[in-house]
Amino acid sequence: MANAIDYKKEYKDLYLPKTKPMVINVPEMRFAAVEGKGDPNDKNGEYQKALGILYSIQFTIKMSKLGNNKLDGYFDYVVPPLEGFWWVENNEYIFLKDKSKYNWISIIRLPEFVNKEIFKWACDEAAKKKNIETKTAKYIKLKEGLCVQCMHIGSYDDEPKTIKLIDDFIKENNLKNDINEKRRHHEIYLSDPRKTDISKLKTIIRIPVKK
Image (cartoon, rainbow, N blue to C red; front, side):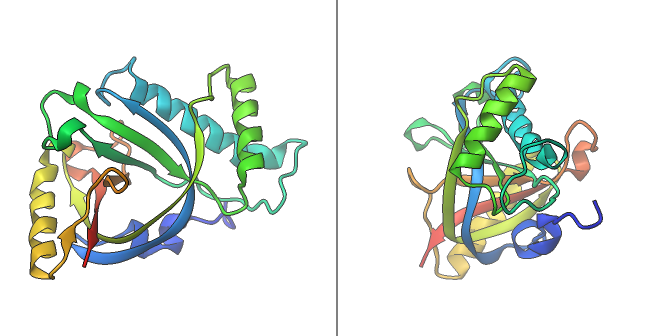
């Protein structure tokens, strides 16, 4: 693991912002993605199944070094953090008590050597070895561009406090919120909620903007 690339450490501007809002221009990256709808806390819901699919694909790629299929350009890496785009129909306020109304795209960054062919192999391999359905998984390239981001520490339900900081920063810097059907509210989860005290959860909140 000593030589494994850790994207959080290599790209601190993307993964380790401060608790004060900052402007960032996010470059193009490739991701494994699963889109769905519903309460992320539902243990038997779409969201939990999506996470199972994404991590199965990721670890199939990462651990291919131990198998017979040597992937072109392979390098060892630490699996990047889970991320998610969130929205609700009719542009309702995104923080709802009824979480069943949420739409989301869950994503995990893929290393640069992964192309569509390698991704398809990983989906097929994960489906076979893990006995899971991976057809909902997609390989996407995404360039977010100009955004404002901020580290949120604490409960997900307390995120509106950090959103307020971001909104104020956007106005003070003559920027405009650019959330639309193509650019979504974006979160990056740096903590495992199963192992971390709720008061110490670290979540990057990223909002697309325009000048």
